[in-house]
Length: 130
Image (cartoon, rainbow, N blue to C red; front, side, top):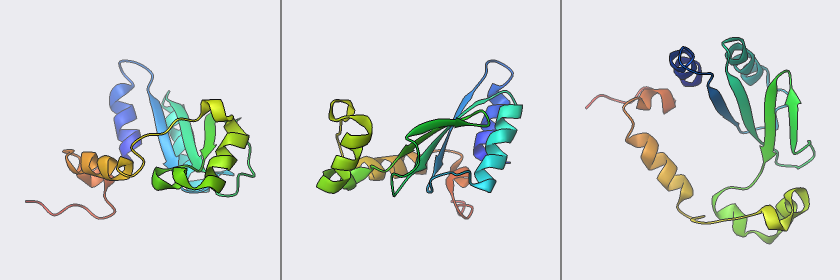
């Protein structure tokens, strides 16, 4: 069972959970992610999917089979690249863009995951026990 499904099953008894799935492709839909997302919906979860649309050809937001899909391209230091910034300005409007901590955001996220007790859920291979 994926981390998201495991977490959702624990939360399901008290309140409907919203699960955010991150995807490194555009989701048109990706069959593996689709299967997981639909399983989570059947469990009573709301599913939001954040997909990386490298070409900015897909709609910025849409709902597919009950899955809310938002597509983005911006992360970390990429936000300083003028061409990338213009893509986001065209898609979302310059007034809706904000940035900060561009060079440390990924490092902070990885460090935070490294401190978790369930690091195996975030690892490609199980972490060696200390």
